[in-house]
Structure formats: C-alpha cells, structure tokens
Amino acid sequence: MRRRIRGVIPALVCALAVACFTACNPGTDISEHPCPPAGTEHTYENFGEAFFATYCVECHGGPNGYSSRAFVTVQSIRDQRDRVFLNSAADNTYMPPGPDGPSEAERNMLADWLACGAP
Ligand code: HEC
Image (cartoon, rainbow, N blue to C red; front, side):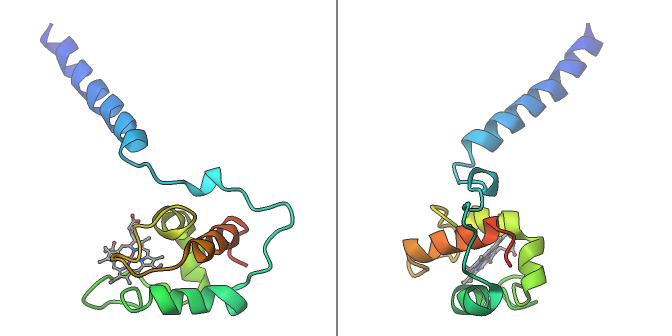
C-alpha cells in the first residue's frame, strides 16, 4: 500500500507541473508564430542590432548588476530565440520590465524576425 502511494505522488507532481506550464504561461510561444510565407525583410544589421541596443543591452550587455544574459551578438540571440520570443515578441511584454518598451509594431517585427531564424 505504502509503495503505491509513493508512486502516485511523483505522477501527481508531474501532472501539476504540466498543467501549470500551460495555465501559468499564457504567453505566445514561438511555435505558434510561424515565419510568414514571404519571409522577413529584417536582418540583424537593419533591425535586430538596433532593437536589442535600444531595449535590452542596458541590462543584457554581459555580466552586470542586472543579468548575466547577453544579447550583443546575433548568435547569442539565435541561441536564446525561444526565450526572447516568449518574453518580448508578438503580444509578450515581460521584457523589458517597466512601462517603456517597444511598440506593438516593433514586437511584431521581432516576432517575424525570430520566427524566420533571426537572419
Ligand atoms: C531593466 C533591465 C532589463 C531590460 C531593459 C531587459 N531585461 Fe531581460 N531580464 C532582466 C533581468 C533582471 C532578468 C532576470 C535575470 C536573467 O534571467 O538573466 C531578465 C531576464 C530575461 C530573460 C530570461 C527569462 C526567461 O524567462 O527566459 C530573457 C529571455 C530576457 N530577459 C530578454 C530580454 C529582452 C529580449 C529584452 C529587450 C527587449 C530585455 N530582456 C530587457 C532585466 C532586463
């Protein structure tokens, strides 16, 4: 009997974690936002670099008082594409923290650019 209860607890914890992942994470995931059929006209050079410099690098420029997470090369952004999307692209507005941030149009550009692989 004891054994059976012990087996049930991890299963419950697991089910709760899965339920929470969907319910507690209302954000739009990158998998829900495919690259548009026509692709994106944006590149790191004409869009990404300035976007991150304007809105993110103040805190994500390398180890500093805010974050050790750096977005100063296109590769570092590609590597964290899913997390960047979930925090800042489309209707996700967790980052940057505070009231000032990219416009809706800029967040949509970021979404397309990330979804197309951050060219
Ligand atoms: C005012 C400072 C500040 C600004 C500006 C800022 N961040 Fe953050 N960010 C933080 C802090 C603090 C954390 C928590 C530490 C960490 O995980 O690196 C964080 C965490 C993150 C994470 C990891 C959290 C997760 O759920 O994966 C991502 C991704 C992120 N920020 C992306 C961005 C992007 C993209 C921008 C620009 C649009 C941005 N941040 C602007 C302070 C900032």
